[in-house]
Length: 114
Image 1 (tube, rainbow, N blue to C red):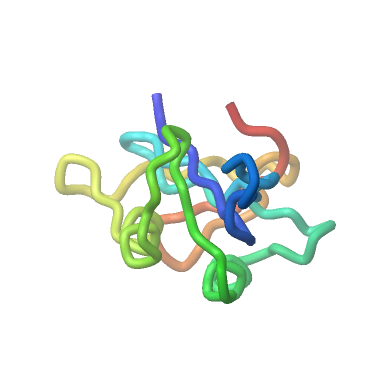
Image 2 (spheres, rainbow, N blue to C red):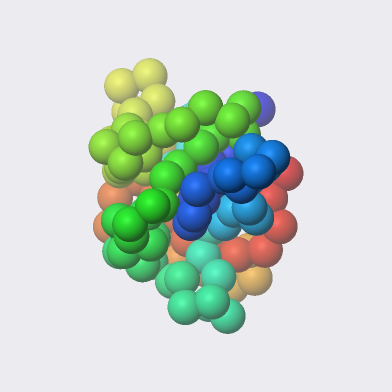
């Protein structure tokens, strides 16, 4: 079990309060490095690319439960992971799903998430 995180690039609809289609940032699962969703077709290839997006005016982050998450908390969730006091497990680089390891506690992953 894990938690998915989403970047909302503009505020919710003023008329109905519905959110516009967010971008999936990635998933936090216990014992694993953060699964950072990369989308080369959209020029999102690194954590710095995500940082640029969530720093844009009006952008904000929510988890899958709809709770807002601060940028600082998102950074910590991605970059400061420990599992029972140890470095979390890495995903195997297979060139299809996991395409690389970040410099810290995150892995670069493409494709669909559950």
